[in-house]
Image (tube, rainbow, N blue to C red):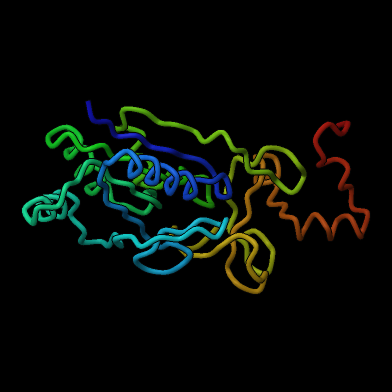
Length: 220
């Protein structure tokens, strides 16, 4: 029986790498699939991982209709056994419902990958709908790490290395980019709540402003 599976996690936990591996495994067993992504770091019509792997993909746009797309492919004689859907947090709720319909009515497996919450710790609409509809929600086991070494659970948006909590929900950036541009950093809940990024932590370290109180296992 076909499934809708949502693989979730923070940035840097290997979602896109797993998406590419999953596609490889299914292809190796003679199954045929379609790859979709949206706002990938490598540009449009691409699915890429931070390990340097990259493949062509269909770009998901506001007007993308997964049901019509797959029906059209099948009418052209294309076999479609499964869909790989990366950056699924950026999909609309309607598009997620189209994916669920393909699973239920056409028996196509759908593997969706995405982060759950935005930089304000609010659920993305696409991720929320996937959690509501998915047959399974799998939290990736590869743990991202906060600058303090604790498990990272939240995504922070930064400008000049400082965390911001206002702005549009979707602004494309990357981890490890120039601090003068919009970028993202993964943090543990404690340091996300305190808005303490690696930049502000280094500043506190050099000024002696009580950094020890923020380290895991510290007294207080």
